[in-house]
Amino acid sequence: MSEVKKLSNNKEVLAYLAEKFPACFSLNGDAKPLQVGIFEELAKRLADDEAVSKTRLRTALRHYTNSWRYLRAMKAGGQRIDLDGNEVGAVEEEHQQHAAEALAKSKAEVAERKKQAEKAARPEAAKPSKTPAKKKVNVPKRRPAAKKPAAPKLEAIDESQLHVGQNVQVKAGKQPVAGQIVEKDRNDVVVQLHNGLTVKVKADAIFIAKQE
Image (cartoon, rainbow, N blue to C red; front, side, top):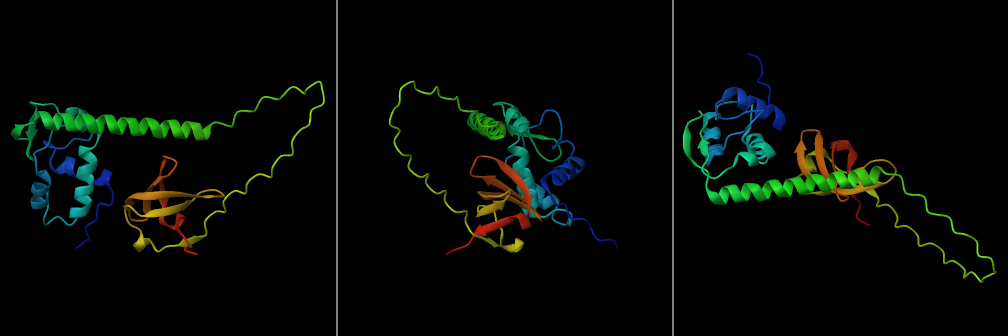
């Protein structure tokens, strides 16, 4: 008997759910508001399914309901559906308002990350040259530039010790960049850098600052 392949990321899990419950989940086009408490229903229906764990199922469902197309579908009066596509109740006004706020926040975060990425990609503008003064002036001696803080000493960390919410250092280029883990997917780790960017790296590129 062949071993069942475990679904390892949100994309695979959502594709699996769309195949198992096509009247409920979709990968493209308009999404439909889901039944309140649908995770419990999914957990029951897939209790004996070895392809997907409850943890992975919960993460993928959160990813689906936080997507822009799903948040746009949350309109007051619209019908929620169960796993088989049956209507089980209307979307309430407060749920529409919550979805609209979440959508606006998500769009603002994406715009800010794009702005920061464009700013980081632009070469530093050349400073305009100063016209020499015609008369001699006394130029004060320049103070020595302050020393840049030394880069933190890095300490390798075992992959099994990495967890969501952990503050880490990502080794990218000459200087490590501080950030926080927001998602862990086997050997791939998604880190929100302190400069606003989000990167996906291998576990062996992640370190922690060594305590002196």
